[in-house]
Length: 286
Ligand code: AMP
Image 1 (tube, rainbow, N blue to C red):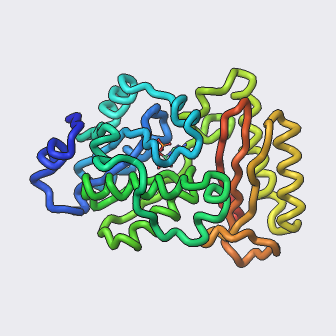
Image 2 (image 1 turned 180 degrees about the vertical axis):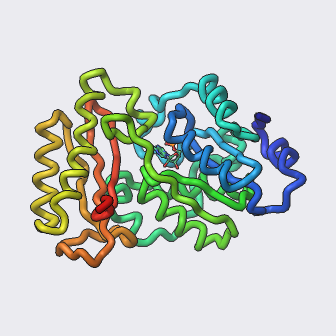
């Protein structure tokens, strides 16, 4: 695995490949890697002979500076995991490499309703920051394929919109969420939980599954308030949202309608750690 830090070294390492050629697949990450990230690398290897991964904790997408400051870091272990997974090129930029003019007064991206709903509402500016960094990374790596995790469902939709807006010829692939044995979605943030918190955290997935079992036989509002009660009873400190939404627009689905594709999305705090998860509804095997 080749490791590069500068844009020049990155371009040199990819100099034999035309821009946006399908033979280059790209997996952007913020490090503190786990098997969920590695499943993206594995999917990238199935698509393309050259797999590029970036590790960059992007300051512009953290609306809470304390969250940015305590974001977990494990670079040596990350490098070992990426090497073992068959990554070809690891890009490790500095903040000044991606933001040579600084991180203030950056251009805004047109994200419409996606910025007003769910994560957009609860983390103001977050998706602007995600677009700023992903746009810069895509311009730097120029991949034909981009792999993102379904764990960050709304982020996938935001990046789909970014690709349309920028007309970058990169194909987006969404990789299913990797879960621990008890159903908890793998996340770098899980390592901030105590042993008790880690056990309690699994109730987030059980609650999503409970909604999946009830839908569409009960109104969304009833399911959402009962699910929120279940999470608080299981030890969560607070629930930002648990919302049954249209799977494409993310607008709340008020009426149960088996014909509309639906997804339930949740964000909740446990031991001060903000966990998110989601589950498409009605897709269980018959
Ligand atoms: P992050 O390092 O949190 O920015 O995540 C980098 C990429 O890994 C994003 O596309 C995430 O959606 C994806 N990812 C994070 N956790 C998981 C998971 N449990 N399963 C699959 N993909 C994941």
